[in-house]
Each structure stands twice: as C-alpha cells, then as structure tokens.
Length: 308
Image (cartoon, rainbow, N blue to C red; front, side, top):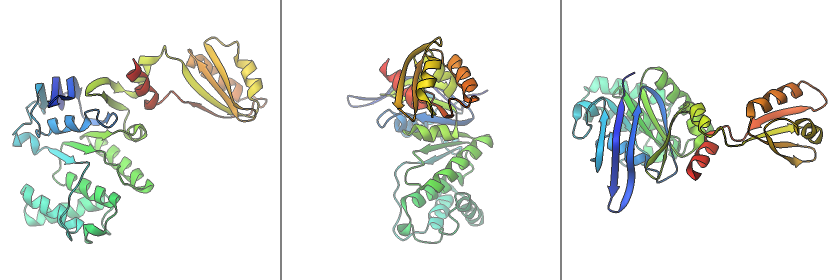
C-alpha cells in the first residue's frame, strides 16, 4: 500500500520551542486519527503537510512530493481549519460558492458543488441565511462543506467536532467514516479520545512533538499487556463474586465499588478473567449486569505510554 504522507526525522521549532521532534511516520488511505493533548504538535504537523510551514529538519512527502509551493499536490488536498473567519452578512452558500470560484470552477459547476456539499453536511435549510445567524456547530459544518467541494483525495480535519451538538456529532462521525470507506485519506485531529474511537481504529499518538505510538488501537493496547488491566463488574452479589475470583491466576486486587453495586478487578491475565466472568454471568447467583474494562480504551493507553 502506497504512503499518502511520509515523514523522515521531521522537526519544526519556533524560536526555542520545539513543536515537532524527529517525527518519522507513514499514513495510507482511510481514516487516521491524530491524537494528542493541546500543544502536542498536531496543528504544526498538518500545516507542514499543507506546505504552510517549511521543515526545520528532515523531510515530509505528500503523494511522494514536497508540499511546499507545490500546487500539483495542494490541489489534491482539502483542509478544514480549527479556527474560522467569515465575511459579515455572507451566507453559507455564498461562502462555499465563492471559494469554489476562487478555486477556478466555472459558475454552474461552482453552484452545483456548493449545493451538494451543503446538503451533505445537512446545511441545506440554512445555507441561504447569513453566517452571523449560525451557531458554532453550523459554522463548523459550512467549513467542512467547502473542504469537500474540490473533490480532494486527502482531507485534513482539525478538531472538526468543536461546537457540534450531539446529533451533529453523530452525523459528522458518519460522514468521516463514509469518506474513508470511499477510498479517501482523512486525517482527523482531536484531543478527545472518544471522538477518535468513533471513526477509526488507526491512530497516531503525539506528545510534546514526538510520536508516542502508531497503529491500530488494539495493537497499541498490546504495548502494555504487562500492565495490570482494570475490569469493572456491576452485579448484585459483589462479595460472592470476589470469593469466586480470588484464587484465579493473575488477580492482583479486588475492590468493592460499594456493597450492592459491583467490583473492580485488577488482573495481569485479562483473557482468563474475562472467560471466568462470562461463565459466571450465566449463573443467576451472581446477577452480573455489566462488565466493562476501564483500561481497554485510548485514554489508558495514552496515559500509560506518557508515564514511561
């Protein structure tokens, strides 16, 4: 599989601040989550891929070429920035339409693509109203509409969920997954782990400008298999469950949530523990209602790797 984006020892600093540090990675087609806290280097990486910044050291290739001052590469890219600035009293449709014209599309094609893009992000009922009347979530949607109009092969979405209500977030999750399934490359930046998990299992974890880990969530999770897993079980008989689990290999600690709610299990052998819990869940004596693994998510992976 060819690499859409490839970096080798990529670094960028601003004065004495190191924004990216010796970053080497490859990104292929599909949806990739760019994950990290604020200040991790996510936006700097995106701007380097867009050719807006020149690397301080190392190289970055997009479609096999340097993106810096490269119109051939940039015409294949769509970008939805985190921040925005709109002209007063311009409608959402006008914003998208005129960006299409600036892009070089003929009037008729620009109109058709603007209407289609607004419908795709569910803004058709508002696209002819002034942007000054839009909520933050609506402004975010209209930015994504203009991102899609040029038919890009590579799309950068910088914190695209900002300001969206719950329904809007679900629609955006579905749209991002749809774009990846259509064969596009989507780089989705976020500092919220739940958002990444909703659209892709392929992640890049950045911390202080460095690549902490790369791969599928499950593969990254396997990096800390020797780290105890926390499993929470909600049941009606937590003390009886604790007695049944106490002698199980790998059990390191058993803590009661409360007398009638459940049990928190710390184990170094989660597979054996899950197998036992599944068997016990079939027995009415324990009345197991729910089994969840608090560590089986990106939050625990990220926090653990940062501590190393």
